[in-house]
Length: 79
Image (tube, rainbow, N blue to C red; front, side, top):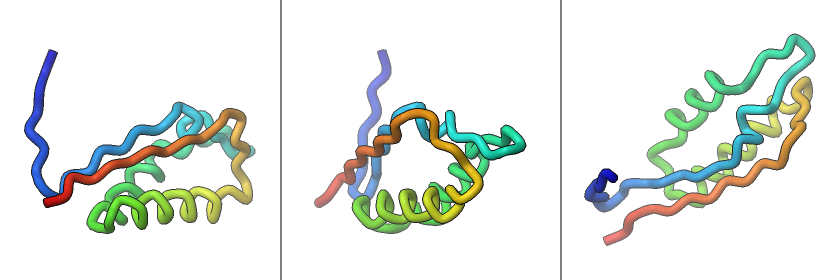
């Protein structure tokens, strides 16, 4: 058991494993690309962040096949 104290502006993102199950024809995964996407948009409000993640995923989706469901749920600590 571990507890953390969240601060104003902190975000939590929960997602299904479908994000990591996506593969292109070369069987390359999205894991490294996801980290880049997460960091690139981390300063946005949570809804914009999730929208940007979905946009980026579907922008590169052209040669990827999503074989599992994808769900993102996020929350942000407000004042």
